[in-house]
Amino acid sequence: MSKPVTESIQLQDNQFLHPWEDIKKVGQNKRTVIANADGVYIEDSDGNKLLDGPAGMWCVNIGHRRQEMADAIADQIMQLTYVSPWSLTNTPAVKLADKLAQLSPGDLNHVFYTTGGSTAVDSALRFVMFRNNVLEQPQKKHIISRTNAYHGSTYLSASASGKSKDKNYLDFMDDTFHHIADPNLMDKPVAMSEQEYCRLRVGDLENKILEIGPDKVAAFIAEPILASGGVIMAPQGYHAGCLQVCRTYDVVYISDEVVTAFGRLGHFFASQAVFDIVPDIITCAKGITSGYVPLGAFLVSDRLLQSIDAKDSSIVFSNGFTYSGHPVACTAALKNIEIMERENIMQHVRKVAPYFQAQLATLNDLPVVTDVRGIGLMACVQCDINKDGDNTPAMDYAMDYAIGDRIDRHCQQLGLLVRPIINMCVMSPPLIINEAQIDELVEKLKKGIALAVIDAESDGL
Ligand SMILES: Cc1ncc(COP(=O)(O)O)c(C=O)c1O
Image (cartoon, rainbow, N blue to C red; front, side, top):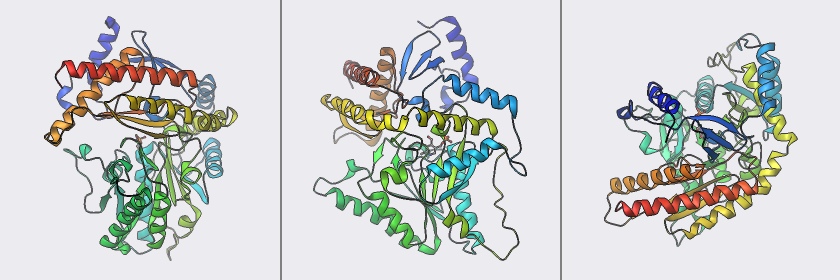
């Protein structure tokens, strides 16, 4: 039973239009109110403790409620709250740019600050288009992305996103954005080797560039792992193959590391360390401040920056934000990185990740679980019920939602926050999680899924 104070907040919450709000449900929503958090746990307003399975939204990497973070943020506010980034600068933003250049691969040595992941992607895409205009190639504007990609919620970043269910009722730039198949290994024909499948999917990129015309294709954008698409992992060599194709046709490679940077895969940046590529641009956000305050950025290579030249005496990139390089956000990022380095969080992730993946893989024993996949501290447990050849796609979809909803409800009662993406339980806990807490997560998820199945059966699903 919820306390009256919870009920009153839940009622008032209907004035807050949330991301992905179902407008028909405004007025009837009863969302869980999260009141406190500490380490890998959050607590609702009725005092129920939950293990934070998604680390907020893949962002609370160093865990909740760090005094040091609060002190650094408060001290910065008292020293310098804000300064315009147009004609002035500030020390935290400068120091953070230098730190990011050191941590990032290759010659990605310049940083453009934004307010989050969507604006990082949006600004990176605008930068690529700007470059081609300066280079007198105004026709080179087409962007290639993948199905099931998620790159954000601005007009450009949403146009780059490729989840069909998010395309209802909204407008997108359809004429210059293209989506090739994502490299989901679950879609690999049984008779095909992983290598052949890799060649097929890399070939999709080359074919698409040739179809549009290499002189018209500006950039390819890809998450190293398609995160909110359901932790879709490409076959070995896919990213390197795509980079090679991009180089052949002078197409900029944008690696969207909004989720994978800052430790999720055990490295500050995953592009080179895990996937062996040095892209032209990396976008990041979320874990850069561990979600304590909003910040995003794109890092650009010297090669790309230096290639921008024109006869004009100035070439202004007229793009930016009031909060670009916000001193408080940059201070939070610097402190966050300092904590990650001091506590060896990257090494910790690399050490516990195999245990995390192995324990989650035991869920394959449940008949409803059709796939467990993951890398580092990100994983997806996919559940499918009653899918047979006679179902329409709409029926399958309804089943997916039905099982996901039940898993969510049961896990929450057991003390684990899941919030599945439809029928996919994406687990990406704070990076400080230890083995005992991994056991707790897996045990609760297993129980929650089993109870959801019983529930679904008794409802005749
Ligand atoms: C890969 C990726 N890119 C971009 C974004 C957008 O970031 P934000 O929500 O901070 O705007 C997200 C958000 O989940 C993401 O997963």
